[in-house]
Length: 245
Length: 245
Image (cartoon, rainbow over all chains, first blue to last red; front, top):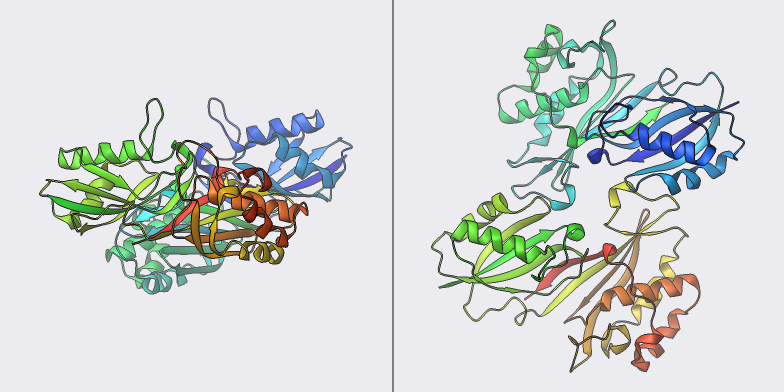
């Protein structure tokens, strides 16, 4: 028995997130099918997180326990042969048997990406939020700074049955920068609540609109009330960038 | 009567090039339909060039003679409302009545873009050639340098009924650079023959493979024989970047 740690990347546009489900195509389904083609085995598969429909991953980790004898280094090319073009295995290495892609994860980094130009960018359709009016990235950066620290992020969580228990997450980085017509909000934390980054991004856009001040963020966190934060920004702008172990 | 000069951009993946044709979707068709929605008029439309199926444009110019009274500055937003997401109008200005997007064109710049990594990049599917083995961009740049100048480019032209007459084109720039895992071949000229950039790119890849030397390029040009040059590289890597008037 080996425990293989796969690093993959995918364009989430055509998928209903990672986690396998009935009646909808997910990344897990195509990954599992490829794994079965390669090894003849379904594998016992653990992923670093679920992602939502339309969310992208530049780095996403999956650990798979398997009896397969295939040489570890040969997995990327073999898997990529069977995977569709919008999913790719970047690497595969052996992990300890007690390693679990989700529970062993120490943190993640996401970015929320905005195309900020009156004219849409055809090459970014489904891959960035299109925002017409000029964004003041300095103002948004000031607002994002208030996210840093260990806070109860109830205000930044879509309430559903999945989220119960400890709502405190430690945000280690939260910044906003402009690269030409792109505005990037990057956030790293030891963990994320459901829709947390998208609500953080939606709240920054409320700051952009002038409906909130950067200094309002601490009060919104304090309130532990989803209604105080901004809307959930669209999935298309969200990228899982890195997973820390 | 006004002559409007539109600057547009499009992801060519879903189109059979610019020029309207029966039984296949083209960029001209969706552009013409949008123009008709906006003005009620088909317009007399001239484009800077045809592009092939799957070729992309960061800047493509169309001049349209029209009796429409709509204010020039309002065209981009109005057109973008009706165009599909993979095509966008970036600008519109009035041109002299004798201006013709094709015949008034003084030159164009294309780039041929290669993703150079053993693992494919899901976000570049249909948008770059995937090349597995490490490319020596210095060697390719040396080869590309030989393209510069006024030459008869018969060896770099797909023979078809469209190409007759003068086969001399003046290449003003031809260089290769690496940006991380991307290798870009950029070429500017006063005009291009059919498939000229893709054959130039395919010939550079022959140099990469060691089947040709950089110093072989002048002889290939000299031969005026399509069979001496490399294959036509796939359309997905080709971008029309700029049009000069």
